[in-house]
Length: 421
Image (cartoon, rainbow, N blue to C red; front, side, top):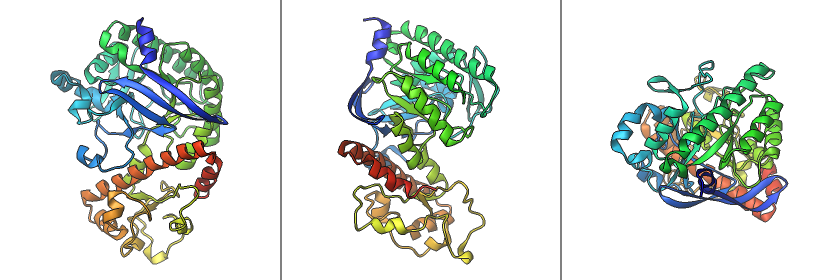
């Protein structure tokens, strides 16, 4: 079996049902920890420096539905290569994630990268120590050290503003394809790296013709899946992004998964699933936690009569008493799918964060307690919110898959969209 054939078989997507363009199926993948299966549509476990935000490995075990694939980022790990080379066992064992598959992206979707530093020979990543330039050789060397199972191909993913320079979009695609070819060649020369599933990055900014060229050319290479890169940036309207995603997925082969970074709001996730996207990161629950908020939307269908009253509850950026309004709270980034527990109206609210939620926080603590922790700046606030938000988000994807199986996807979408801004 050739090196290229090995790259292809390390990940297999089996589609069981297609509704419109939404795909229900299972990814089977071999890695350093053996064979794992991941149901799609689904999400990955987001980490920062290979650690789930706010959580220890033991705490993570108390969260239901944790995905079997963990998302680590090269930008946060590249500067630690010397330490990991000396350790020799890879980032999974080093960070206590030895029972999961590891997917490595180039950048952290939460952290924007300064533009203008990529060249035809290098891609710049930004960690706590500053900028580090990655050549294909350096990239492949890092893969040998990290021992991950899936990896985003090295790519020039700078996003252009809508109507941006056409030459820059063309250059983005050309560079990314050249990087991909060079990395595949280098990886084929090392037996250990032949077992890594390469996720080809689809680039081209906001120009549809360049996105399509990138998709067609990347699909010709021996990649195991595709990343629709750059959609986490605020370059174009979401409707324009959906049009691009729809056009790109129509060009991609049906037997390989499609992943997108930085789109995580429930209604937007469903829009992307309808257009053929299979996998998402789980940065959204982390961002909700960092705002001091808790996910508060219900996604059961048909709805649970005991919790349906939640649909009538105002989200945290809705109506409130003026005397309780806190001018220090930035309401602009808070979505209608969360409640902000920094608000004074929760200081004597002894209900769980979300009625019917079975997470550790909701079973043992109240909104008032989390309000107290937040206002006291206690580290436990982030831990409890992260537990709740991760579990709610993972269960949301379980509901999506159930709706696709049962033929109630549109009912679920209408239910979720009722909370949309």
